[in-house]
Image (cartoon, rainbow, N blue to C red; front, side, top):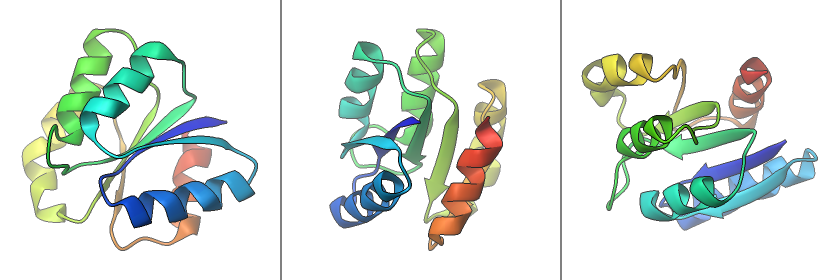
Length: 118
């Protein structure tokens, strides 16, 4: 799978990218929402793992923009702020996002979520 990781925590993004690469995936990290949007507009991805809260553009805004442009890959939202999920759940449902993984997470949780995308 070709996977985009959109996560502003560089260490987490790098560790997750290394894990997924070791599992045989082609992984592209993006360290902010704007870069994730640019990457998705320029190339196709089989999946995106995207942080809900990022400093420039939040993950839901990125996904909504990609959805409107017909460029949104199947998505897994990761978050360290589960208290925000009730607020954004209708927006995620409207664009077809069903998989949310709460931080801290194990690699197996992400692997399982990716397996459920296809």
